[in-house]
Length: 81
Image 1 (cartoon, rainbow, N blue to C red):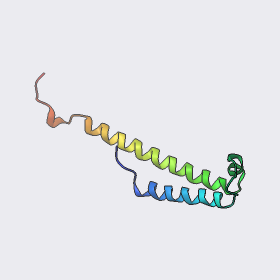
Image 2 (cartoon, one colour):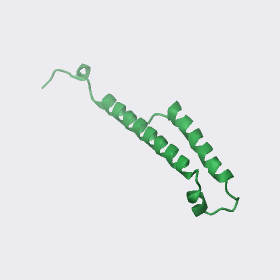
Image 3 (tube, rainbow, N blue to C red):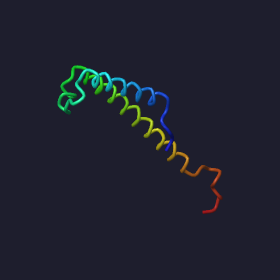
Image 4 (cartoon, one colour):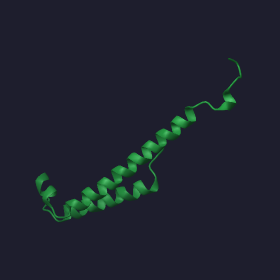
């Protein structure tokens, strides 16, 4: 399967920045619930959703392209029945 494209890499950086913004607003010993309750957590979810969609589309496109390459073309037809 092909590697990730530039858009996915950019979204990963954006996701990291969004998560860092949440973490910076919390004490170091904050529990999971504190992260989920943080006002900026919605930004993490938004970016994660866009990233997930980008990755799924990229993977499906790669699978489709692989499948198309696996279909023999007319040039492989020997003409024998």
